[in-house]
Amino acid sequence: MTETPGDSGTTRRLLIVSYHFPPAETVGARRPAALAAFAHHHGWDVRVLTAIGADQGGERTPLPEAQVIRALPSPRIPRPTSTAGAPTDGGSAGRTPPLSRLRAGVRHALVRAGLEVLVPDAQVNWIRPAIRAFRAAVGEWRPDVVLVSGPPFSGFLVAASIARRLRVPWVADYRDLWSVGNEYWVRSAPRRAIDESLERRVLRSVTTCVTVSEPLAETVRRTFGVDTRVVMNGIDRRPVPAESAHAVPLGDGQGRATLTLAHTGYVYPGRRDPGPLLDAIALLGPDAARVHVVFAGVDHGIVRAAVERAGVADSVTLLGQVSQEKSWRVQADADALVLLMWNDPRDAGTVTGKIFDYLQARRPILLLGYEGGVAAKLLRDRGAGVVRNEPAMIAAQLREWLDVKERTGRLPVVPATATEGLFREDQLGPYLEILREAADGKARRRLPI
Image (cartoon, rainbow, N blue to C red; front, side, top):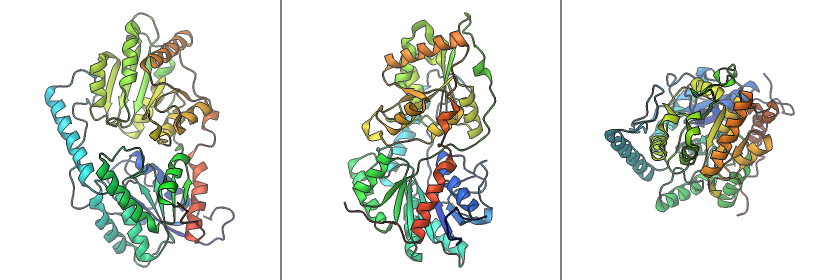
């Protein structure tokens, strides 16, 4: 194996610090895993420090296991799940029993309390075990550069500590922003101030930062005065499921075609709201029976509550949390895919990794989110979907798709050209160059604020 073209041929050593990593199947594991595999393939000597055990998932680990340091958090902190009341057998979204609603409410309150008191996040119990495990495992091995990917941002403290002790450069990879992001995780002004102060202190020693869009990069530059580059997420190549039921005109019992929508992944309280979509289905009147939405993933009880408010239980199926393979199957079998984002200018720079899964599925995408954001522009520029936020506009789009399916038996697939240049390997070449600059002391480091 050799370095990328134009390199001196020197083998560089890279330590990747990432709480999430395979075999975990979480979205947060994909970007660091892809970078580890790409760097290893191009001749870098890569080690990974992670909190994920070798038996915690079914995803293939992209490196030899000897190159992965697995440090379990300690002490264990209970993390309540938020899936109470969600059927796991593909059941419809009927009314939630009062006891299930109470349990979900208690768990949500515990999660909110944890976000307030655990600094910088609920993975703070990983910091010391990770640093100790690294020291014990590496012997004389020493990285030329340390790369940390977050969230969670406890990993930033791990990386900064290791880099300081070894006197090597480190790079901060923001899949989402920390204290100056779109407030997914920070619940109060005092807590936000604490996190921003901590983040500012941690970044004093960072060599450069990387994030997934230019608006997010500009926020980091402006706030902290550090060099920040953009490397998008990308499409992870995988076998595309064969055509199945979505290609066959389905009936509603009266000979009319039906439309299947799918949403896969998490639904966050207050930020990814399925309410407008479900209200739109209710606006369809008798045609509501011709639209079905499948939700696959943790929903914190939000979808069920929205279904009850809209009165469209017969049009919704909740699968609960599913495997990656099942998630891809759900996407492939749908006529169109639903992407829930925050309809707010503060979400302009968010480019969720899910959008790349959806692009690979090549189903038209219905985005509920900020029309002026990077994700919306990507869909429009690529001819891959539409942005609708008001229930009446969403209902009109659903009627249009129903008409198309009635006439032709299926919705047109998104053209293959929509994915050109968006695969993961298209992004990772420039990423290695950023790491090479950092390792060689050529990064700009600080910027004037």
